[in-house]
Amino acid sequence: MSLTPTHSYRPIAPSIAPQPILPRPVSLDSKRKWSSPEDFPQKTQAERRNSNSSQGSNSSVTLAADQRIRRKEQNRAAQRAFRERKERYVQELQDKIKQIEAAHAIQVSRLEEENLKLKNELSELKDSKREQSPTPSRIPSSAVACIRDKDGVSFCERLKEEVCSNAYDRLLTEQLFDAHGFLNETMSPVPIITSTKKQPSKIDFFDELEQSLNATPLEEPTNLDLISCSVVWNRMANHPLFEKFDQDALCHELKKRAKCSTTGPVFEEFEVQEVLHLMEDRVRNQEQQQI
Image (cartoon, rainbow, N blue to C red; front, side):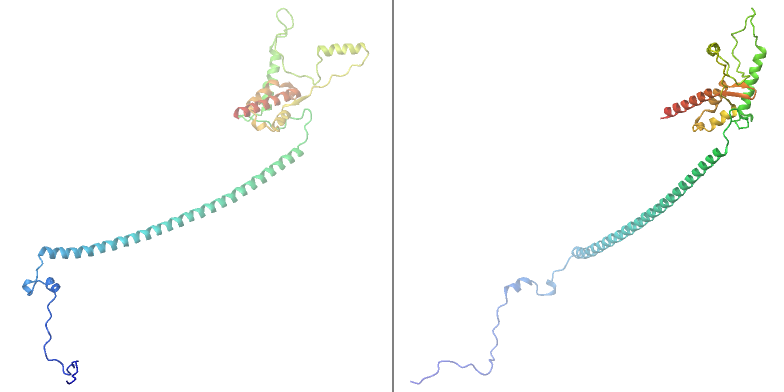
């Protein structure tokens, strides 16, 4: 028994036998159901229009979105520029206001300094005038200026004309005795002073009589403290509240208390003080009413 190999050798030359044809997959047959161009499905006109419109609508939507974005950016830029202009304008106004306030403060300070300087000068002038003016005597001349009316007549001249002239006219016209020959005591007193010596009263008469009994020499009565009209008016004008005095009321009160003398209208010291106190009270009452 001969031993033969059990394995087979592959032929060296390629096989000339044809390859076996494999069956076609079922999936490919299911996808393509036509075999000729006639079998290719044709799109309808409506389908083609819808396809074109969908493409156009997509492009228009994209364009509109771009335009909206661009408009938003433009609006933001415009608002930013407007805010910057507004802030710059407000800053300029604030700077101008500060400049005006600074200039106003400087001007007010300068005016206050000038006002204070003028007040000091006025006070110095008043002091120098008061020092230069001599102290008036008991009955000085009537050269001191008084207030004048619309006709240019001074108060003292008018007072002399009214008081002295009327007083002398009354002395000449009024009857000294009544129908029974008695002294007419009902006539009003005439404000005429013929002497500066004080007239003795009943009490003074009895005092003098008692002094004569005691062998005491008679003393001359004290002179009346009479002040001329010009001096009285000068004293009124130098009063601190003279600017607040009612000039008409002041003239009326002085006229009621004026007396006639050889030098013109005169006043007693206590009457001048009485008028001053009266005018001061009126000024205080007016100030209290205003409050």
